[in-house]
Image (cartoon, rainbow, N blue to C red; front, side, top):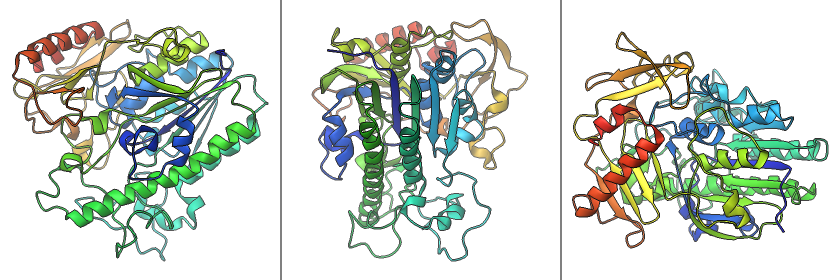
Length: 502
């Protein structure tokens, strides 16, 4: 019998590759705790990204509205409320525990403020934690075009495995559960863990677990490009080493995740707590000779992601329904009886969880601002590129002061609005918003400065490896019409229709 949970724990592991998890058929790396959890949960087999990359995905989950059609990267807008704000008003105790540096940089810092309490474990990737390295530290290997990273200054101060950011975050979450279980009537715990995101740096025994013959420092920084091996940027041997380093980090964070799951169990929370495990996106590690998250269409390696939900009274199993990350917010609002004030795009998963429906949507859209817009149905994926120059583009926000406009590396900075900007309204809002148009030749964030290679259309049922591009066939016209209808329903900006030739 289904029981309405009192508490919710959301565990977001960044860059978690679905196809590498044992629960989804992966055999390359060991993920025993994720796999064990899956045997107690409802495993969603057709779950996809919405907005990419890091902060847009978190906006999808925490605010329930697709981000990438309107802006590239930003914090919670004035007209919308994160789920933590709504829960706080209801008297639900909310806690954020994270080592994700983007949450505390320009463009991400507003997300933590509505939690009742938050903890930031320091030292991951771009976290500006230390001003100088430990003099005894030899340094992490810098390869494949990666310049100096703040991690270089932080890494030497980790004295043991427990000092690495991922283990620290999971230990903090375990401690919070032990100290707070039974002391709050209802709680919402959001664990935003940056592992297994790069750098794929781990201590032994994880560092050598999947490549014990490698000599020299492990390779931990992937290039962001397609054709790295073909172009001679890395050798096949280096590619295997880099992939093994990801596997080591994946297995390490799985180990520490087990401590959090054990804390949930020993504190008797299984009977009244929903646990959600998911990610923001996957990560290319050589599939199609693609590495990182470069400017290519979103293949399933990146865009089809794991989602597992364990809820009291719900039998474990597999769910074949089409779902996406904005549906997590809709599920939480449904569970807690919240009516959000902002325009949202998600569909509650509760009918799937409770077994009262076998689907909640027929399509979803996913993408990165300024790149292809993808329509995903249960049978097909259609990636629509700009019809000409990547123009016109629009960026809509009233949070320009909390966007990354002042980063040191100007090629990733957000351009400021200029005299072409005008006041507009976001769908579902009467709050004025700055609408800045961009045309070909304008400086724009680097992820939109990509070389497009046309449209892509894949039959997901008969071509799961996405090899046979059906764009140009009669089927494309049908999918293009479906994409246009989807964008109309979402009330996407007019510029999207123009740049995509719709």
